[in-house]
Amino acid sequence: MIKKKLIVAVVVAILVIPAIYFAIHRYKHPVSPVTEETLDSLSVIEIPEPELLYGLPVDSFAIEESTIKRNQFLADVFLKAGVDYPTINTIVEKTKPVFDVRKIKVGNRYTLFYSQDTLKQLNHFVYAIDNTDYMVVSLTDSIHVYRDVKETRIVPKTATGVINSSLWVTMTEHDINPLLAIELSEIFAWTVDFFGIEKGDNFKVYYDEQYVDSVSIGIGKIHSAVFNHRGRDYYAFSYAEDSVEHFFDEQGQSLRKAFLKAPLKFSRISSRFSHSRLHPVLKIRRPHHGIDYAAPTGTPVYALGDGRVIARAYQKRGGGNYIKIKHNSVYTTVYMHLHGFAKGISKGTHVKQGQLIGYVGSTGLSTGPHLDFRVYKNGKPVDPLKIDAPPVNPVKEENMPAFTMFIEPLKHQLDSLQLPVKEITKEN
Image 1: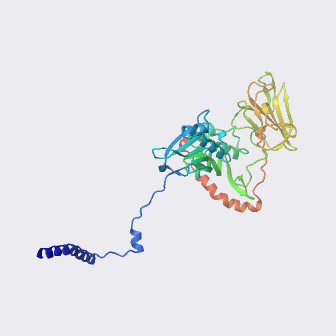
Image 2 (image 1 turned 90 degrees about the vertical axis):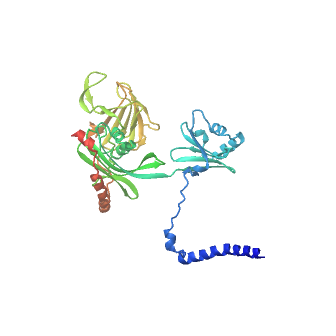
Image 3 (image 1 turned 60 degrees about the vertical axis):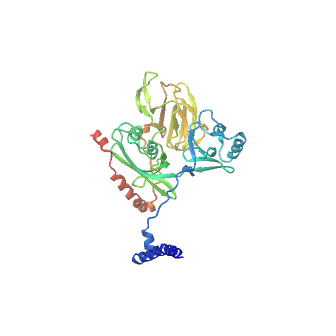
């Protein structure tokens, strides 16, 4: 009996003593009540966002990437991935409203998303149609096909450069997207002679570049630019008037003139306007009332301005294939030695400024591929490089105060940009 009482006493002691200790400890160190302040002081564990590829979580799949090979069809890709013929036929049918799989291109990327289990079944197939668009084929519960677009990021940028050889080369030397050279040549086509660019000419530009993932897919909007040509600054500001954006100079004059500066892009002048030139074929001196632009056969030729084609013919002992365009009551332009004519160009056709009309060739009396370009003013030949075409559609007078306020900070930004030091040193 005594032994039994002793055992009970020990058990009670074991149960009571910890309770007493806990009560005393709690009294000496009371638990703080949970308040907004204490909650704010607690560290919050942030769960990282899952890494996505084409909208699919990367860590949920075994992923393989490849490119379309020559003579490879969509069926070949699916067969290699373990998809049977009946399923492939269903896939092809379901892709028809989304994308014509017969148009898959050699070199385009595709991505396979496999399950991570031992079966390694294909769950999703993604084909990159271009830099932004892609097609997804999901093979989970049922076959589902859809098309989506990658997010495009707009990155504001600035660029400056001093030209030593050409605008294109300057862009590549400074790790600038060379497509910016084309954009600038378009903007300043009516004010800067890009065939006569000189060493030391320079540019400054504020623009947007478009990115998908980390890859540049092109030049976006150009906000402002200044091109210094032969010591003169030519400004360009993008400004919307009547809901349409155009480029204007600092005086509110449109950069779009009645004529392009030249009828083709990125070439060189092999012969200038002259009243006495030694003809390269006839070996006699005779007037050359035009400009010869040396360029490879097939180089596109564009209409200098709006007008009507008044002649499209062949001249065996002269200009070969040629086109004559009457622009207005004053100006007519002629394009000679063409390899061929653009589709739809015939006598009586109305053309727009910059419209494709033909291709550089070497027809007629010619020693090599080039464009013999001529301009007639009131029926008399004039030097194409000396045409001073007036601007069209300047900023409306009532909008000039708003325009001036709009371009003031843009002009200040341009003027504040510094040209590359190394290039300035070369010129000095």
